[in-house]
Picture (cartoon, rainbow, N blue to C red):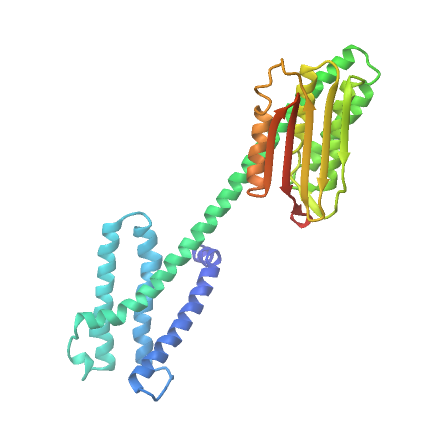
Length: 351
């Protein structure tokens, strides 16, 4: 009993739609049958023998849909499926000719066996209709399941990519903090404060797939300020922020990697004259443009500037979260490594 209740609860939408479809086809079937029988005199009342014949076909269709298809066809037992299918149709014909017609038309149609083609022309259209409905319903159900599976895989991949960013960032900054602590720098407490602010955002505010744009911008400013402490008077760091409209969201930490790489490559190749310029502009329609330019020396190893785990991850995240709605340009010239990202932000209601 519990199994039956579970089946009905699980397939309630299909059962309701099946009932509605059967009712509509039932009315259509008898309306046309009446017109064919009575010519221009359109009589649409229901006659008992028609119900009996119709139910015979419906029961056969349900047997195919909920027994033959799941038990044999879906399990690729094709020989058994077709043997049972032809046997079932044969049984339907026998019930039609030797039971129902003997009851309702004993002296007319029940007194002889009509042409098999004529009998099949009455039976098959109805059975094919209901079986086609079942195939269409199952196909749509499978498509929905596939879409849900793709979504779960995508979410899992995004969480994996995001989880790789935090340890990468923490490792670099703990090394820097250690160096300042060894030197007993007066900037150590300020670095700890900035680092805790950035980590708080990463750990608690970045759990969702999208965050409020203003929060991400504040994080980028704090992140830039944290790294700027390491440069001191050895260069020029600029964070230029245009107008930021409200009502938009952005994937968290998706721009952080580019700022991190800018500081890392500039400081590793230069001891002075470091230049890092970050510009963020957002239109009223939510089209964001992010530019990050950093200087480097030509005689250092720059072959891997556009590679590495961080950039590979952020490219994958952009492809997953902003398919066909973003553009990423990475190039280098005149001792400057330049990154430009343009993307259409999502409305805040999706957060």
